[in-house]
Length: 448
Image (tube, rainbow, N blue to C red):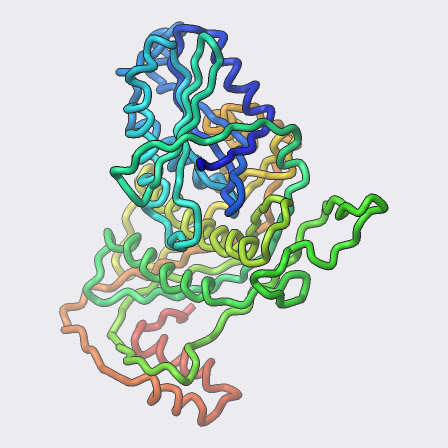
């Protein structure tokens, strides 16, 4: 038996509007959430036309052969940054004339695999074996408005299409549950003496990967309580006179506790390497995740929030590096320190839904520019009053390696040796160790 997709009624109307243009061939993405029992589709977003298409011919109607796979996947990558925890690109759709039905499935299959590859490429986390690996390929006939929904298993490139149910529901995400937390970030990424400027992004990603593992292994307190993974998120909530759980408006407040180090039962070798530069990420990061209100499990809610924490910091760093490349900031001397502000996170409401999507704003960007970007990528009007800026102060401090031809010295130390020295004075050992390492191996990281 195939999967069942419960779909917001507004999505049906959105797709139907394209059906009023019989000769149109429209591609787009389907946004929603997977769960073991059923999947939810809350948004359909068409692929924005290229600028040359807009400028050359206002009445341009692409055919199936004109579908630009690279452009569709680029849109998927941009859109995936705007999705808070719990939301995914669930698949693709094509609205096309009935005479194209013969070739439409091949086009859909190719797109759905390309889109999935694009959105997972830069993730710092992986899906678990228990999670749904099916993605949707939807064909809407522009003449009859008939919908054909099929799924493909992303873990099997040779998988055959499986039929799926497509069911509309009003107010699907109007009462979804939200979880929020603020993460205080202070990530120090050392740069070896052999690192060069073009490796900054690579080194940042490696540092974030180590930090992401800490988040994955952290303890999450929901409204101050540690809850069992398999319990229901709404367990203990008050019920109305009809026996239904009252609609929850306030988000769950989550605190994140991370370990400073591995437990003493684990032994590992530590490599101390001479470094002459560093990248420091500092600030308070606002994180948010959404989950359906159909008996959600605690583990699924926490997993959604973990992924939002990891995604939002990774995305900000990626956006910053893209901005530096596009604007071609003047190169500084090797020994000169650089400070950059990470973009702030902004949220925008979706009509008829409790879910908010997000974007990232640099300090010099105007509200109008943010609205324009939402409109372009989401294909819907977002009013200024619907945009909420998360108050954050986040910086990147880049202290590049200086030019030095000395050979890099590596010293192998066991973790047990380091811990024994720290235990000599637990009151100040950690701070002292940081200061000693910074001066000795980072060459005055904190000289200012």
